[in-house]
Image (cartoon, rainbow, N blue to C red; front, top):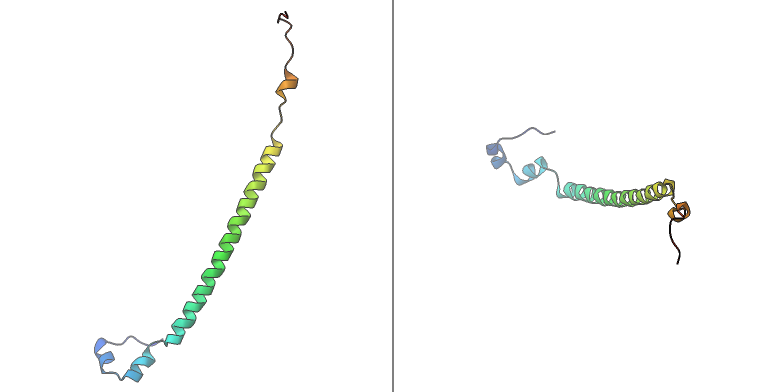
Length: 86
C-alpha cells in the first residue's frame, strides 16, 4: 500500500505520477460490476427464501389445522324428551 502524501507533494507531482498514486477507472468499473452482480444474486436468493418461508408457513398452518380435533356438535346433541309435540 502506498504511503499517504501531503497536499503540497501532490500539488508538485506530474499528472502521470499523480495518476499512478490512484487506482484506474477500470478498477472501479470492475468493482462496481462485481457489486452489482452480487447484489442481484442476493436479491434472487432473498426472493427464493421468502417464497420458501411462505410455503413452509402454509404447510405449517395446514398441518396445525389437520391436527385440531374435529367436533361434530350435531351428533352429540341428545333429545331431552321435555319438548311437547303438538
